[in-house]
Length: 120
Image (cartoon, rainbow, N blue to C red; front, side, top):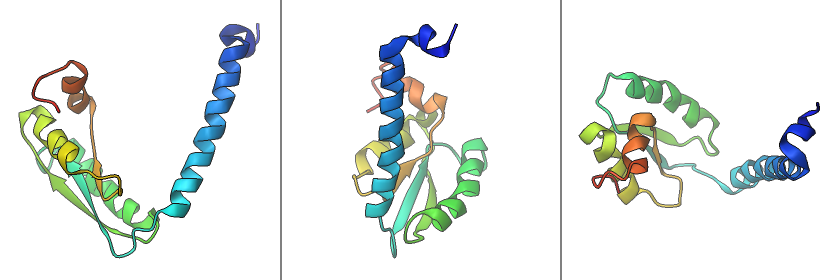
């Protein structure tokens, strides 16, 4: 039994098309982005010192180094409401300019997915 027999011809064609689009999109986005002289706010919806904060502070220098224009990346902790407060801060502040990003975990995503009225 081959892989294409398991998922079918349409599924295989869909995977190939999705892979081609996914491969092309980052190149286009990277070519258009330039964060030189900008500050990126990296919102973490948890308290300082926890796992998500540690993860963000580890990754912030890598983002600064590898994003086009080498922007300053500032980790901003917004604890409260089981991470709902920080996710809502992101939802209200973020613009399509890429200057605000959110570090999430499953505990941040579940309130929204489960239609918790506190989640925007």
